[in-house]
Length: 116
Ligand code: DGP
Figure 1 (tube, rainbow, N blue to C red):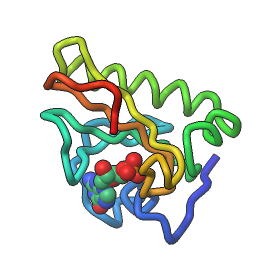
Figure 2: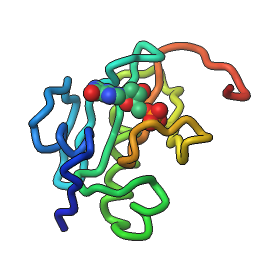
Figure 3: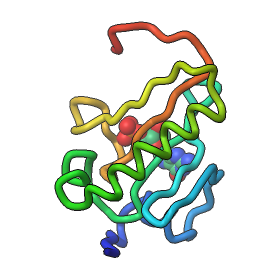
């Protein structure tokens, strides 16, 4: 199902209207490198369909959600050393700044806990 928001930055990346360093694509997802990387590997995996966050994506399209999680794993396995962090900032107070669901795949360095 195609659901897009003409004002959404990540929908424009999915459409190819804004360039991105694409890592992988599936029927349901696009993965590209974050413009402001926080680790040696910092890839955003997003659904093609516009949903504001991972919870709404899971409710609307379980198949796309599973594909997104599998893509995150594949990218982390291809680029990392076995350890990675998969982050879905959800809501403004959790530092979500782009309101199109995206998983941050972070790998390639040691990480602290708790996150800030
Ligand atoms: P978040 O704070 O969780 O909403 O993360 C949004 C991420 O999106 C942030 O790490 C920077 C990244 N980003 C924002 N604009 C662009 C863009 O135009 N291209 C790419 N590749 N990444 C972007």
